[in-house]
Length: 275
Ligand code: PAF
Image 1 (cartoon, rainbow, N blue to C red):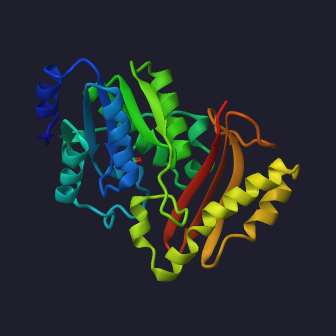
Image 2: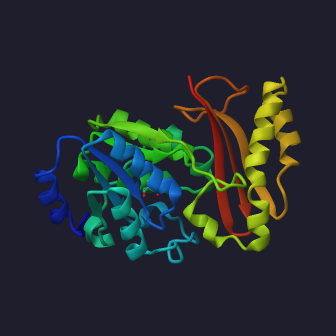
Image 3: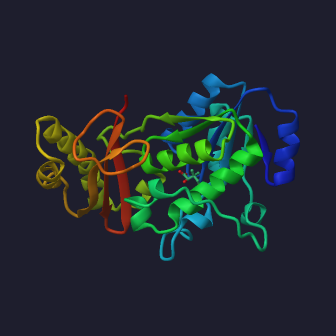
């Protein structure tokens, strides 16, 4: 696996790259969910590029930018063993040189739910992924289903700005107790970690109740009781998979989405109802 630390090194590699490229953007602290993205990319492309960049633009004031887990050496080994051809791991000033001021807003898909709770977050995500797509120019982009709204934002970005690539949404990888894998799970203390899988059970109950004919509001109230302390629900909803507009009932091409905080750690989960 080759390592590029600068835009110039990435461009030099890109000039001689194989014809089909899969791209997996990450912020590092890699777990099985990330490695699954790489495996999907490996199986569908002649070469795979992964990036590791803890993107300051997508963290709000008071969020965990400074303490976000970082392990470049460990991550390099995992990516090399999983079949990545090029790792792009730039310093902040390579992506945001002095005076950088161009950002990307994707509109209403980024405004509700995570967008409302984390103002500016999706502007940061769309801007960095837009820049990375421009530099890597892959045929396929791989993102995890766990961050459902992010996947909708990135599909919109690719469509609206006509990036010449498809977006593949790869199913969430879970711990054996159902907790969705996330780099932020390491923040959970013992009690929070024990309660955390109840977020997934809450979501499943929410869906069961809607499938049994309850309205979204009634299903939300009843399913909320499944979440274990110290978890506190931020939202439990049903949304259109493309626009992320709230839905009054579950239907095809929708996500049931949930977010809760356990102490200072926010966890997300969802169930996808494709076409
Ligand atoms: O999901 C993430 O790790 C990040 O939001 C991403 C897509 C790598 C952009 O920084």
